[in-house]
Length: 308
Image (cartoon, rainbow, N blue to C red):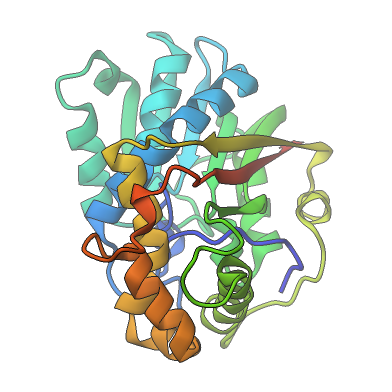
């Protein structure tokens, strides 16, 4: 496994915006039996991260007329933003292996002037059914870390790019936190313990199993090994303070609640931590986290860029 710092994202929710069926795995299946994706969680995540996605689009400086691939398009939040950026003379291909998720993209764009700029393509990210050197930009978000051979997957995306054009890869970053170190229930340091448990869960559920190719390097090296040059990275801070809107509250609450709503994850917790989380996510509890005015959400979203 590559020793990339892996941001926790909602694997039950099919990640944030991307489809892991896009590379031939059963949703968030990725070959790791996570079960079917949760459409509500996907849309909740889309709403939560939209402001930073817009910031990333601006930073990428996508040119009008560009031909772009969204590799692992999920429900299409980034497809929509890319379609807006490329203008009437550009085009975006949304690639996913899930017909249901591609239908979500279609529904998102239905009735919008952006719809004519987007084509939907069922396909596996490890063997994309498109020609060489077709695209000016390939975007992929938190999909590659699920591939058995991450370098091979990136080489397939390299194949699709025109010479000296860019891949933008969202991976790594810094995990989120929003609770005080001592939330007033249970032992202090809850989020630190959850992050350590998540790394264990990720290793056993995502980066293990038959066919997984170890790759103990950071993402910059992984891109170079796949053939990319001029590799760089940019991180975007996600920072929020109360009062939170409904989408923000629902997303953050879900990040805690999934530890007690899922039997397997709950079994990883100490009894004290499980009871503390139950109180933090229960609106009827005196310890309900989202009535507090001292929460502070922080996360770093990292995008790696390399040229073909």
